[in-house]
Image: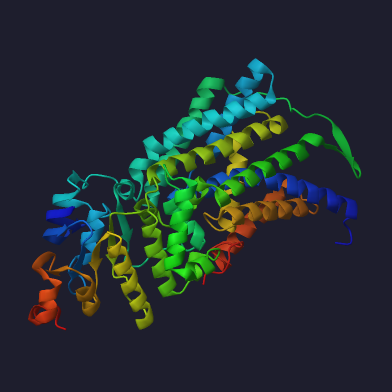
Length: 235
Length: 291
């Protein structure tokens, strides 16, 4: 469904992605592991068109999306939850969700059903719906960021380090929501530092090093034999 | 204060509020554009001036002030969107200096276009609401109060639109985080053009509303723009509510100061407010303290 082929990207003069190739199938949870600064987040940004690919191709359901402006991507079914959450701090929780809900072709019934659905998964967001996004705790902001992507009804969510800096209880909740989304048939490309979580929820895992994919394996194989994890991640 | 009679003080309060509301109308367009695009629009006063000229043209041919107001707002809003698309969009994300130079260039072009098209002599638009009423010791023109109320209505409409409308939420989201707004599917380039159009339309509205008081010349925008920049800074760059409060605050300050000194000298007060704000609270007077 989502396919990156030999993607290169630059930040100014520094060459950060050296030919990344990744595939995510429909409904599949794919993990993307690697140390800090190996280009995991940049890979997601390149898919979103936030960083321009200097070479290679990115296709989604067979359509070339490299040259599309970022704001067209949610319409094709791509949701993005960035690393630093980036909730709209001065907008209320409900207004944050409305940025994704108030789109063309939305009917009031469907809109209410979607809102009800994210409130059911994240009851705390219902409680705080009239509170500004910036006043939420880190974990609540993460939930809002995920909920905001969910109301787009995406076919795939690009999830960038959702558990970074969260309490263990919150990490459990993030894991649950990944499993719920997966059960609903939403594909997820998960960038994480949390290796056990990634291996637990993913079907396949890519390991990146120095701007390129060095290894890929079914998550089950890595759970059974962690030598590769040691080699690339040192954990 | 003992030397100032109470009635003079009250009259100056009314004067301050009236000019504060007009100023707020000019400043809110300016601050809206700055907030969303980080563009300091030096052509804002020229859009106001062009709005007044377009309005005077329509007024001459139809004799209807409200038609003049409406047409001027629409024409200048479209012009604003065109300017954004052709001049500012290619510069988005570049050094702020380039956009300052670009809007300054646009300002010179518009000023000289107006001089070429309409000549140097002033044009008149008659106020739609005549008459005067007794305000304590003087005859106060009803139209001045009407401008203030109309400005307040336009600003109020803008506020409701920004607060509750779907597109208002899009604009606020884009103001806060352009990248994330795009990732949520908000058509950010279109939002930028629309915001520029709204800002330009508001400038045109203030130009037409203000024209009956002073006549339409190439320089009608100058005085307002300068003061609008002051209140946008005093109110906190890009903060709509702050700019409106600052407009009223600065206008009241000037009005009270002119009880003691000549009105020309009273303008100094607003610049003192500007300097003090920049020195002691550079984020603006009317914004919550950043957490």
